Length: 310
Length: 272
Image 1: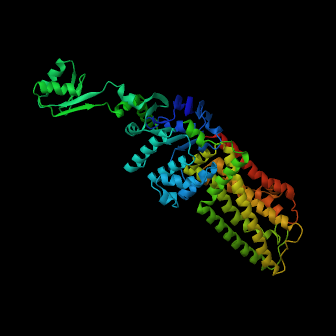
Image 2 (image 1 turned 180 degrees about the vertical axis):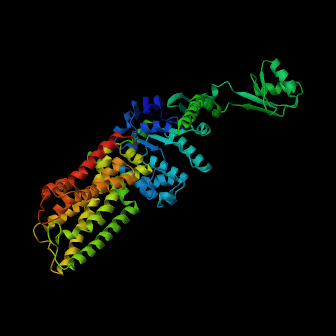
Image 3 (image 1 turned 120 degrees about the horizontal axis):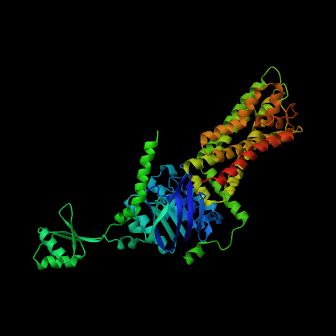
């Protein structure tokens, strides 16, 4: 369990993390979402005691990270996969991490196998691709079999197989009863992996809710209809209380009536239907709506800085 | 959750000694697993021995024996050591922190050992011990090599002579002191080039500046620098104008102590 209470980090006048309070619970994958620069990485650094908060607290298993004894047995984390010494072999890197927390050495081949790095254990890390470094970082996080895991943008640099692998791994870790916090700026990825979402923008909490309710709560669900006799069908639909909006490509977006009712209505009047597709509002759209303000602010601020610059 | 937590958590809190062992093992594995560290030490040893042999040959074949003062049959043993041994080992020590800051590995280190003074202590212990061993090996190697070459010319001194073993031992300690000064500078400055420059200024630059001062000031200021103090502790006879060998030893210890103190304040207070 990770508990944040009023966590704030200021760099000069800028609040990178602004009065953030939330709880990450065990047994599920929690997605930590926000646009680039929203404060996700800073929040994780504060949880790990790497940065010192301006105010507020971050507790892991009820304690501040800096007070943990042999912390890698409590919290496994991957912040930056490239933050390794290229001259070391993968095995030696993991060995140093293991001995630092009194973790048995037999865990090293286990995590190497688990992350698919068994055959490159004695290779220098500088020869690794970004994807292999991500796997190595995940191997290091898993060394201490910690009940809490935290990954910052773990799918960066992974190929399609790697992305599927990490998705399964995260779900498996959560099913084990572990607390899993995964950050991403990609909604689509989190939609497939996370059970619960925490969305931040400009360092502030925007949403803390189950993944499904981000779409369920939205009024955007509709049905896409294409028909050669579209205007006729549209009249019939509106007559029965549905709302019809013409789309640019000739289709109609229908709300207020489900696909079955639309099909029955069209059949009853002998109108051919070429396409009939119920559409969930995309999580992507819901996420963009949520973060629009903070992203706009960021774009405007960047533009202003660029103008003010030399 | 509870099942996972209890299986992973320690049944008992490990003792302070066990945790100290963890940190020492951590730093030791990191030091020995970078091949360039070992190569640097090897090159330093070869350069030191080689330059020492050249100095010994030159002194042995000079028309007159060493004149005395700071320049005796004993102290010429350390002329090669003082630069070819000290510079690479000090740079190696600087890198123990700066290479972790430049790669970002320092965040892995602080996540593994969140008590940062323990990281500093662990690095100081491991790097200091490695430098001390290297220093003593090199100091004795340089001494025996030089004296073997000089004794053929009847100019050498023996290890059996009073004061000689202490002087050679002190020579090894100086290398450790220089390394720890570099380690501290690396932690404070974090960038490799800046930290190396600062370390070399502290070890050599200040003494070099003192050398060009007029007569009384040269010694007044110079005796606080590492090379002046080192020349006193490796000499058999006390040199005028400098601190006593004992106080010079304190000067030699004060440089790394100050660097490590500054490092302790820096690493515990700054964001990683």
